[in-house]
Length: 183
Image (tube, rainbow, N blue to C red; front, side, top):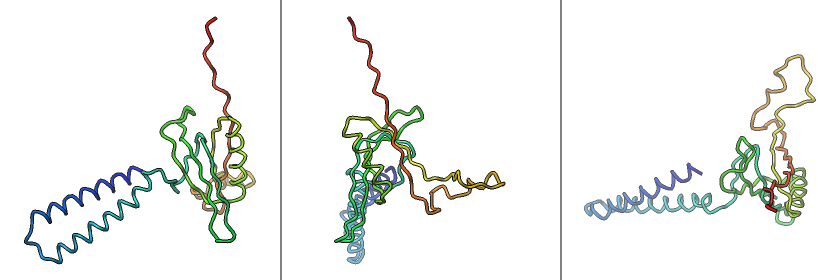
């Protein structure tokens, strides 16, 4: 999100500089003015696409490993139109103490059956009023791998590109402790 803000700031600064230059320098050739208009138009398109991150659209960036789950929306694949399914998570990242920090963020991941089932179970618990934390693992460590080389089980790519999908685990939080009431 920081890179989006930087790109948008640069786009607006370039737009202002180009427009100022066109207003002050009236001796420019027509092709220069035309190129400036085309450049400004391209910057407007970059700005429009950059605003998607700022307007709250779900991001396809990698999700944090530990998070507080606020809501889930599951869109299953449509066989008629051929549209791929997506699962949307509304989450807040957890700090080292296990407390939610920052503003909630919407994430989208591609639909797969295992994740959809885990998300549906979590959604039912959320609807029941239960607070949930989530944990994502890409199964980097394979406990079934037995090898005399002790580092062999850690050699997979961190991104999980060994063919394994990310797995989600949702953990119930205990109810908050309330201060004692005066008598």
